[in-house]
Structure formats: C-alpha cells, structure tokens
Image (cartoon, rainbow, N blue to C red; front, side, top):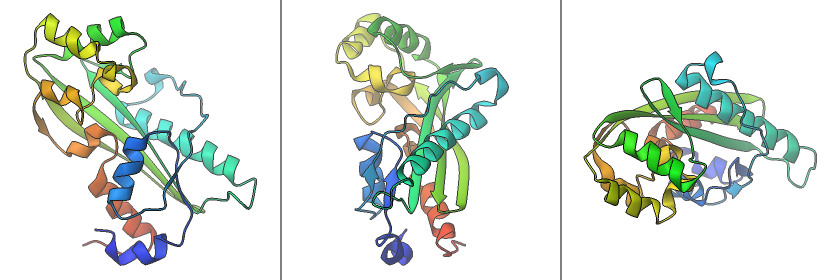
Length: 208
C-alpha cells in the first residue's frame, strides 16, 4: 500500500507518540521500519461531556502528537519529520470504557460487554511538519456469551489492564469476540488502511 512513498518516508524521522510496541509493530508492517517510540506526557483529561466519542479519541490523539512534536522539536538531534498518534476507546450504552484501573474494574467491564455489541473508536493524528491530518474510524464488536469463571480466568492473566475496554482482540481477549463489523485493526488500535491512505496523501500520492 505504501510502496510508492516508502523511498520518501524512509529518509524521514518517523515517531510514534506512544509507548506501545503493538502499534509500533503495526506501522513497521506497513514497511516503515524506522519508526521510533516516544511516549507522550499529554495529560488525557479531556471532558467526555464536551465531545462526541469520535471527536474525543481524535482530540486525545491530537494532544499526544502535539506534545511529542513540540518536545522533540526543541533539539535538532531529535527533530521529527512525521509524528503519528492514536487513541482507542470502547463504548456502549453511551458510556466510554478506557483501560481498567484494577482487576476488579476489568471484570465489571467485561461482564457488561459479554453477549452484547459494543463500538470501538480509534482516533488518529498524523503531523508531517506543518501539515496535520486527523481522523477517526469505528468498528462494531459482538461479544459471545461467557461465564463469570471464564471472565475471571482472563482477568487473572493480567492482559486486560492495559487495554481499552479491558480486552485485547489480538491476544487472549479475542476469544470473547463472536464477530466484528469494520476494520479489525481499528479494534487493535491503529486502522491500517486509513492510515496508509492518509500517509499517501501527505506525501502527494493520491489513492483513487
């Protein structure tokens, strides 16, 4: 997908405003081998009441990107060319579900999700010097049924604690998923197709 622009982007300093090796690996799978991780110090304290779900994750991603870009730009040695940031949120019944704070919280969230459909939003921002692109993708996820013992066994693995909504679809949490409608990678945390399209546009290669 990115083949026409890889020779250009390969000469750039590409930074992912995240500490997530999972998202780094996804970007590397696009052919961008030189992407570097830089966790953002942006305080994720936006008021959910002031935003739609779509805008909330996009604005949070924007905050991460701007903080990393401005911090690294203070030194020529770390000046980035491209900064990519993302934020993922699970939603259901008008509620947002981020990363659980405790195992007990994770169990409560998963208990609500089993047997029902929820919506996962991932907001992405790409900053290429003065150019910025901001977008959000969403995906419907149907959980199958599960017993309390099955939920607790998953919580005991520790995986839910650093995942939005208390589960990782690419890990053991995928066993709860009966079906999805939308881009699988939106649930993982980085919608690959849309990211590729927007990167091509930023580097002046139009995808029809």
